[in-house]
Length: 256
Image 1: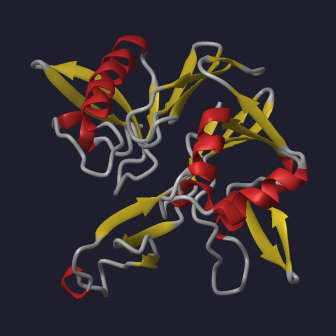
Image 2: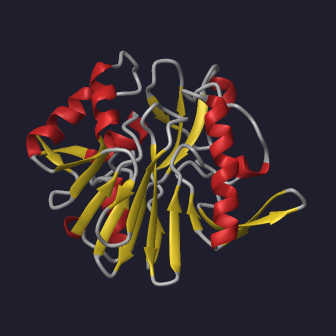
């Protein structure tokens, strides 16, 4: 398998849930009080069964008007129209905004030939929630496309894809494990958004169930170390793809 981080950029976000590009080289955090600062990178995975994308990013465009995620896929040597699966961990805007995009005044699927794999509970929660983290206008376009593949709970898809409903970050958050031969790639999304969260224990205020999310980081860290998983980190600042080892009662991050 081959895996690529599709780096979309770094952003600040405040209570309005608006994501504003943030370049640490030229911007100051002091100018954006009460903001979180996040890095966003979906992933492209090539397997013998085809291409898949893990979460969709924000859907921002570059200066020439091309979607950043399309640009990154092209630079990696692939065509976005060949993506077979879009695996969605959950539907918060920073993960789902890139499911669709505007072209010539019309809203289209970012991956027109892909199955959009979504937990049914998360889909229903998005439409019933009052949270600004969900943008239902995006989901309306996806729903009309007929490209949704709803899944429930834990299970397996074709081509070595396993999924597990975790909760924690949001009520119906899920993670993915993709296996091919001896290779195993784990995508923890916002349960394990950056490797630093394996190195320290904390309850994040932004999680639906912070205690559950903290517990799951420990569980998946141990599983990653014991099973030689390659871990992908959606919100990593620098190390987006690593192995994990247990060390002195904690974890050690091994860059890939």
